[in-house]
Image (cartoon, rainbow, N blue to C red; front, side, top):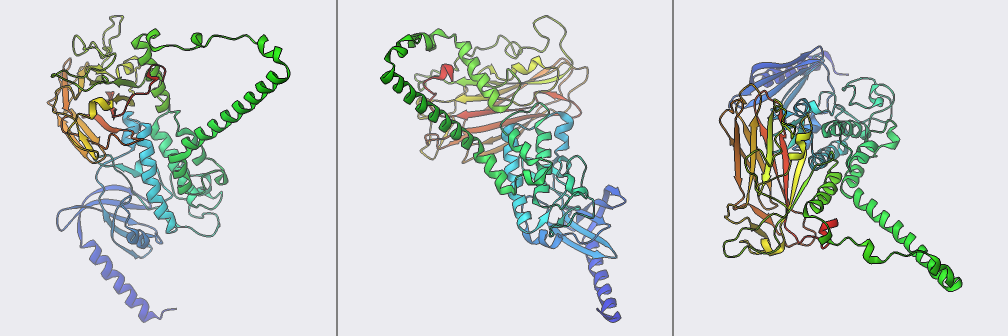
Length: 518
């Protein structure tokens, strides 16, 4: 026990620390205020934005957060506990909360969700390794920064893990927090895993039924014992689970084949007449040769396969095959099965429909590669479908002629290599400040750029033309190479956008021999 003199001295030191903290910034405006505390936007002496929190609780693991300094969460500049309150000065994280995606229907693609899961799991592994639980993971506490990086904020409900006693302070957000967080048991790493699973499932949208669904089902089990025991286990399943299931299926099929072959061999040796009695079909009648399929039918087979992979509604992904040889004598490579549209709307399918009915009032974006619109199928839906994607296969005969080496090649300075985004406004209002946000990941090169356009009047249309010349693709000849992506997002002010987001994947490799039925 400290004596009165020591207590008084400690109080004076605390007052000095609080005075110092409050003197490091100026308040600008209150962002949030509840009986549990208040959050302010401020500016430090250099004019940089900061966040100041006054919380009516103590015991937060802020010192450990400060020491860990992981890029997932805001940097803690200073904190002071005084008179049953905690005062925190921390980094201001610029960007939009993920709730904005839910409000506008811009659901995550499976690729985005997988990337976000792995990034959050990396940060949570560091937290849990230090014995810290966040306890309030939800879309509102995930900030998407320009460039796509997602960061986790608001550690006001965080606490250190303890030895199995049920929680006595019920913090968190219902609907995202697991049952044990409300007095039904002790929270641990599996509690954050539950909230992470609920959050990612919601951000994928209600129609999602892709390959991550099984992972999210396990992450959100009501019984903690049935969940992943750690984020490391979740990461292994996200990265390798599909491969392991395929390998297991192959092993089962091989076992069945071996037993069937052994049984047939047994019949042939012991009952030769039985084999002859079986009806047989000539192998020629079972094989569908590529020339027997119309080009459009072969393309639709590929599209349906890609849609199922991504968990899209029927009619989803477009796959484009570039011509098999390198261009020569100035000729441009052509996309198989594509045709140049008569006007800007013909290839897109024009949302008025074939019946001639008046067009719906909407802002709609159509995405083209080589005059081939890859998200026209979304016109059939009267709600925004923002997970359309296109895969462009570039055979070795094409990319091997590009400038570069075995490390990276670059798209040639050729007008053929471009992406176009056609935007139409059939509403009665002007579409203010349209911006096309582009992110390109080429392995050795990352490009993030905004293309701005003037306001789009009712009944008008605009085109964003994005040349690909000079963009790099890393090591396209490497075995197992899967290509790189360009993600496009149309943004504006106070308008819901149909087709707001889309992705094109460039895959420089030879097409499979059985492309027609792949």
